[in-house]
Image (cartoon, rainbow, N blue to C red; front, side, top):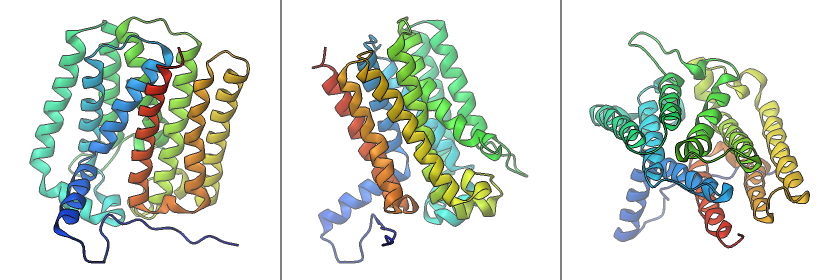
Length: 302
């Protein structure tokens, strides 16, 4: 029996009360301006630090979300061709706020670098610089054409996963001077694979616009069925890695809760809800809650 794609809209067609309309408008504003993504990076930095037993520096919880927010806001101005097909309303909002976005991206980048410089080790600052460079190169475009990492087949997803891993796992570890043991490498691998699989989900969602823009994403080049299989492969690698570490008692049992994330993405694939833009925002919110939960529970497992 085939399942019909589920759809989620942040605005229903039924009449709503004024308070409900205000709440939805606020939620739309937060999502459109990528604040939910910044919150997810904050949760990831905090959770991985606690899971790895790394003494996080307070400034790290400022640097990472501010830098991530700046990068994602910047990309709103560069994803013109594909967004015109995939999310024209979001593109229109970005074009309208173009000047403000540019100023906020510049200010956010300066604040993030300044925060990293104030406290911690030089290696941590180098990681922030690399993360900023990756984000800038991801969707770089000149006045005449677009060219960036997202236009390189296979590199598109790898660069995003690598950037998130750098900022949420490697940066706190190096910045605090903590040793990089087994927990670090497992956390880095899990973060990389988790972001990679989600990025493939987004490519499936945006396949129409990417095809029009000439972006060689995995679904565009290999087809959607093949891309879906690759997501399953990424999930299986996470399960194998975490399962082995927990069963051999290399890591505490709390790490098994990481497997909730592969389960979430499996559900997204099973019911074809990776094609809905509203559902993709919901997945980010659920992953944020999962990460915060991991951070809280890891404190009781020691």
